[in-house]
Image (cartoon, rainbow, N blue to C red):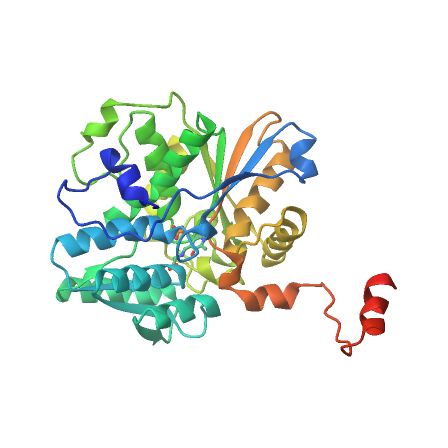
Amino acid sequence: MTEGLIERYRARLPVADDACIITLGEGDTPLIRLENIPEANDRNIELFVKYEGLNPTGSFKDRGMTMAITRAVNEGSQAVLCASTGNTSASAAAYAARAGIACYVLIPDGKIAMGKLAQAMIHGAVVIQVQGNFDDGMRLVKQIAAEAPITLVNSVNPYRLQGQKTAAFEIVDELGAPPDFHCLPVGNAGNISAYWTGYSEYAGFPTRACNHCDGQCPWLAEPVADKLPRMLGYQASGAAPFLRGKMVEQPETVASAIRIGRPQSWELAWAASRESEGWFDEFSDEEILKTQAMLADNEGIFCEPASAVSVAGALNDIESGKIPGGSTVVCTLTGHGLKDPDIAMRQSTAPVQKVPAELDAVKRVILG
Ligand code: F0G
């Protein structure tokens, strides 16, 4: 039976001994070595993807949600609330259903991928389409949570980041050491902050994402790694506040998951970048979609557009030499490609041919 990440990493998570755990068997996702990328092979670079699309609801959000919903339920909460570009709402809806509590999600009107909306609906969440963007939704849910007895499960909820840090633990456990570089898409900026927390804690250092024991977490006494990766955060050019150095009012990108102009974990993500001596960069929609298609075509890995920006960034920095030859690099593929079938269909060049149900007709297509 899959035990889920809370059981696996319980000694390094703020979970009470007698807590009732809400899990769907999340975590323990594959770390896949990319084999058919000449840019990496030619420079002796070991390039891995952490395929988070294989979590129960198809994205990395499940890591944070098992923690946030477990905490909410054990504190007696009857309802949870989030704003979302789609994946958080899918995950919150599923874990709330599992726990038997209510779930309210605010999504930007017409701007979330079909698969994600279907998930929130089938799991019975109350779906509220806001005539605005994610940042508007975020502003509204914070106001509601301040007034009503309802638990906010966006990544401003510190237990979300605690759950998400376990992805870094898994990578170190599997590779035997942290990578030299870790590449991530950045939207609301929670995940890059969570990974930095995970890597730092494994090396025995607290980060400022720790809110529960003033940097005195008991698990810091038992470090398992003796180095830290550099954290590389990549954004879509139309929604790149970290590159602009300020909030973006009207974010726009085909990668709807990261169509965010006002990241909530602004300070934490800057700290991760600075402390790790990493950097941010940006990519056009065209480059993002090209990378998504390349991964599907060359490696058999289907991720959603937002996820592909991590690999677009890694390849760009490998080619420029910013990531030197001989490095070990991990890119997080945050969500499954099936979340957004419309985009995949639209950009796919694979011919779909209609034929009569006759042998000769099929033979003509296959044998020419
Ligand atoms: N990739 C995917 C597939 C996402 O869904 C998100 C965020 C990110 C990357 C960026 O992660 O926000 O921690 O920097 N999605 C949120 C949501 C905002 O509502 O599903 P981040």
